[in-house]
Amino acid sequence: MANAYGRKIEFSGPVYASIKVDGSAIRVKFTHATGMTAKGGPLKWFQVAGADQKFVDADAKIVGDSVVVSSPQVGAPVAVRYAWDNYPDTANLYNGAGLQAAPFRTDDWDAMPPIAAQFTGK
Image (cartoon, rainbow, N blue to C red; front, side, top):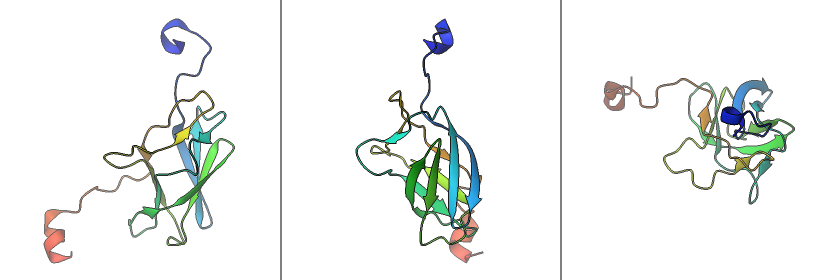
């Protein structure tokens, strides 16, 4: 309705815009974020990684148009993923219009290591 007919209504859930490392946490900024909320309890499906590229489940809290993500297992975070799984059926980040955030990742690391590395450790 917003795109096709020019109606002044929200047409998207929160969309990843940028990140900023803030000590041992990462602030993830979103567009389409007015009234962001975690439906059904605390935010779920956020993961964080350091330079070792090993993602761990993270604590996440909404602060204005951002989500602050951290984990005690990652002292110097560099990347965040949200709902980055085959079936993130309980992902619960929404905006005030009731539209859900899409999965995203802030890294561009290979999803799978090269086959040789799996066997040689290199």
